[in-house]
Length: 415
Image (cartoon, rainbow, N blue to C red; front, side, top):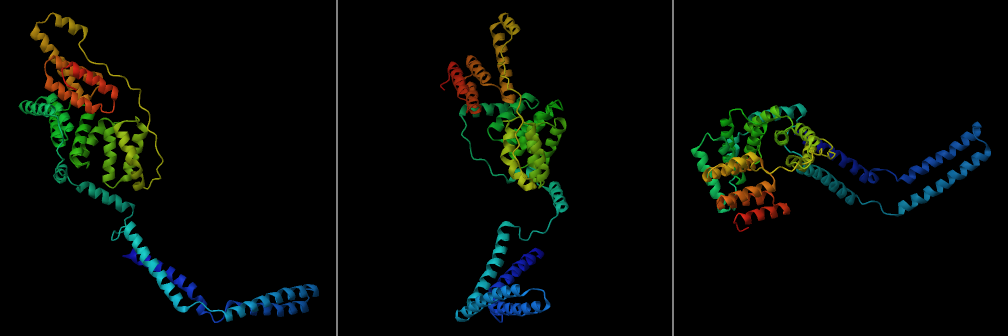
């Protein structure tokens, strides 16, 4: 309320000054030219006094009289012109004062109503930090936020891939202690947009592994929970991010989500520092770096920082992954095996390759190798599902797509 009174008073004061200027001509008893005449006449009398005191000589006195007389004639002509002409209308001046006051007062209030925060109390820095801490302690949980997220629209899924994922669900349910099966289930549920099911499978995987984990496992679980909550970083996800950064302070995805969390907690100052440091760490082109670059300018604005673009550090040169295949020892051992044992050996290698691609990703050559191997094993449905997933992963790489298509053709598919 104090602010409203203040801006109203300032607007009224400016209006009063404008009104004083507009109405000044009506408030004066005489026009300005009459005042000028009195001044010039006084100057003429002062010339005679100065001449008598010897301050000036006769020639100077004559020059001054001539100049002052000229000014008296000009002022008298101006006075006659003002007396003959019309004066500023009082009604028009009054209307101008009222309109100016209305524009200033209403315009000031209207601008603040649109750009300011009416009804919002004054909050200094310490008060804002305290409010952010209170919100951080009382913000919605993961479950509460998930209940408010509308269901995703149905996706178009190839029947073969949907059948494969359903089989994976059934297998994982029958083998609840199979860590690898839970990791695969989490990966494929995420691919389908079933983020709640995905992070639940990831939680099971972490529980089975019982601490024998990579720091990124906690970060991946946090990311799945954040996706399930529509981008909201819940207290549960925050704990996982804290654990990830304690084990690996340089973890890029975790640093991205931690900066996002600080923005959600109304601490853009902390979030900006985290994101700025992460940009400097790089590597350029990483998914989390791209996400930061698209949002950091807005976060800097909220933090009151004059943002200058930060160039991410270049990452190490990418090394083409090696396609995993049977070693020389594997080939020698396979020659001594029976047909059935050799088939089981091949299936084992294919399974290991499939698991690694699902959890860690790989090159187009590796995906093509997996598709071809499944075709040789007669698993055409599974090969089709893998081919569909691989096309999604390499949608922007024409060379990779051609390689995958060739492998699908060799596997007996109809790409």
